[in-house]
Amino acid sequence: MPIPSKRLFYSLSIVALIGLLATVWTDLIAIWQFSLYVVLVSVAVDLLLVYLKQPIEALRDAPSSLPLGVNRQVKLRLHNHSKRSQSLQVYDHYPESMDVEGLPVSLSIGAKQYADIEYKLTAIERGKFFFPLVQIHLDSLLGLWQRNIKLDEISETHVYPNFAAISQYALLATDNNLSQMGIIKKRRRGEGQDFHQLREYREGDALRQIDWKATARSLKLISREYQDERDQEIIFMLDCGHRMLAKDDELSHFDHTLNAILLLSYVALRQGDAVGLGTFSGESRWIPPRKGYHTIQQILNTIYDLQPSSESPDFSKAATDLMIRHKKRALIIVLTNIRDEDSDDLLPAINLLRKRHLVLISSLREKAIDDVFHQPIEKLPDAILNAATHQYLQHRKKAFEKLLHNGTNAVETTPDHLSVELINAYLNIKSSGVL
Image 1 (cartoon, rainbow, N blue to C red):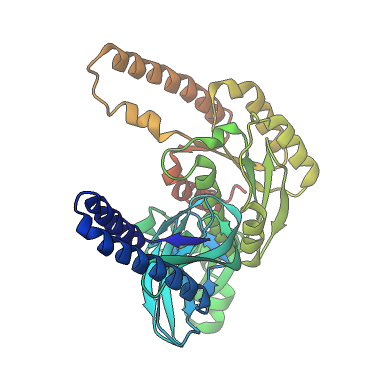
Image 2: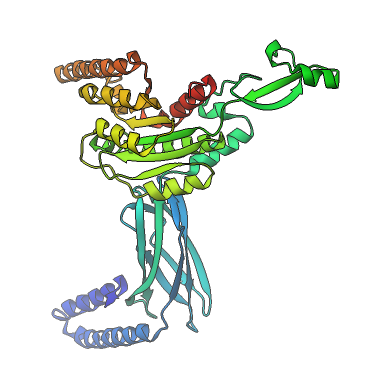
């Protein structure tokens, strides 16, 4: 259907005004009739001409994969196959779960020319999404009409957890600047579990590191250098229950957790370990531990469309399933949100896992809870909220202390610090040799 423009309404308004004045001054009747005829003919001819124009061709260049919460550019190339320049407005039909800057776009394209436009797209939800079409409003020659054109230009994109942090980690690791991310890697020169290499003795090396046979052959002190054990296995147990739906910013706790899993997976694979993943309290998915950087892509493809459910966490069932699935000793990282009511189910589940595995519990704490203590207490409701928050945190602290007293490795943090806390805990476990 054609779309009438503002210019058409202005023209009709002027004709209507002349007609109104003609009811008072009859000399204007002829002018009104002539203007009405001119406008009606112009409208009809202009409408005919806009449909005789050759339509615009549109091609979209959209990323096939997008990191969650990071803006990316989408490009549209518009071809004008007509012998005349054409003015138009462009609307791209992007998925509803994305934020866009830079649309719609108004432009003019010369005869037999093309134009490129770009706009920014930010995904706010994970999963598979489609761009169904490009919509164009093509201006008529006199500007009285717009031809509404819908071009079937289907593009598919997958929104993954934010894998951009992996590039940042790799860059900082190359420059030995991981401390900028808050990652503290404790270096113990020459110590570890696995033999790495022979090298010349350095001041500070322990006597037990000296290789006396190599020293005798080379007639200078030679030390053995060791490194942290490789070929170990790391398995993430991801809680997909209702608590992970909580939000402190644009991303849910669940999305923050997926980002942390990706980054720690990269770190572990870089250390020579194998990485696996299992989910519980929702849709069940399982990846057995594997080595190699291709594992990152497999994890991405497995979790990119995974969403938290409305179920409560069932730690006992998750532990039992894991014990059946995996026999070899591994570091089990449980990612959840611990509450005081979890103790009766969580502690037996951890004790079951500890019969074979080393367990690390990572519990997310809502940032909104910490924000309560920064708010001034001015009225009674403020005091009640502050006291209730204190009581809630006391119960939560007791549940967390039970884990520590049970000898379980555990970290509690807000979602925005989860990646760094997990990496530091993993590196400490590796360097201690307890795995």
